[in-house]
Length: 174
Image (cartoon, rainbow, N blue to C red; front, side, top):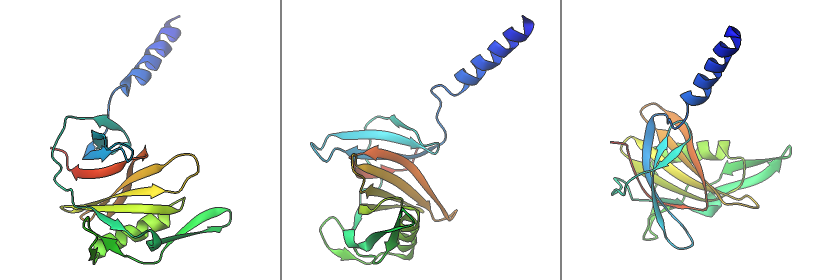
């Protein structure tokens, strides 16, 4: 009987320990619906979770869009292999810009790690970090993956995956 009580207590602690908790906040992100423009304000955590947050003005709202021909995908060994073939970027006014070495490095990492064809990629520089929203070509849904490249730590990470969104701006956590 005593053993069952101890086991029940351990199970309760294990299941309750992670409820409602989040990891370290990484970014505040403003997303919008491509259909109707409805905006959403969210905190993204390093453990891959998001939580709605109050409205805020993003620190970075300059978005550079990669040309859809920058990435090319072919099937190799029954998997998609994505290659970075060019680094054409345009700003929000349609002007072509020259990407810096960090964006090029980030683009290459995204291509090397993509599991599906890329049809759109938006890059947002913010201090020593770069963010990218990458839209993947998948049949039944529209995965939009937020990545981050921390240039100080030389670390790339996948932060979160939405379905069918645009990113309007990013801020670092307070």
